[in-house]
Image 1 (cartoon, rainbow, N blue to C red):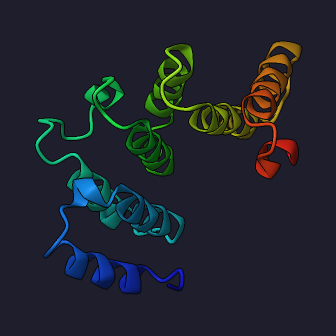
Image 2 (cartoon, rainbow, N blue to C red; image 1 turned 90 degrees about the vertical axis):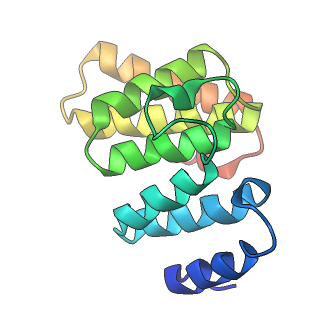
Image 3 (cartoon, rainbow, N blue to C red; image 1 turned 180 degrees about the horizontal axis):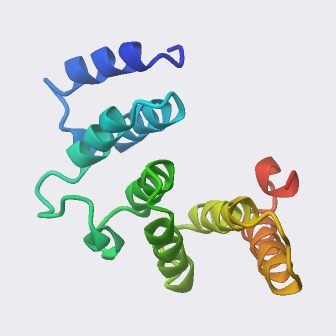
Length: 153
């Protein structure tokens, strides 16, 4: 299926008649990602919120609870960054990496995002910031040695 927000939204609406969003996490996360990348941030929020139905969370720091799928938490963190809630996004990434939430692949993605966001945050790379960025990139490559994106940053 092509990477079109409207197509994915329609497809998931039909799927939801038979399959609860909690049982189609990948599909809803794909929609959230497409929405975020195309600037449809309200739709991104709604897609992630569908996955949180029944958790009692509206997208706060409870998303860091061990009971929440780390893929959903990472999608929420990316949403926070896209909506200029960058301090909260970095804090959540820090918690995810510190607590080693998720598989090594998820951890690698968290470290790569941390490195990219630290680099984007401050154009003047002082030695401490540069060290933190390189550390994040190194962790990403070590956690998922075959993931090409980690090696290209």
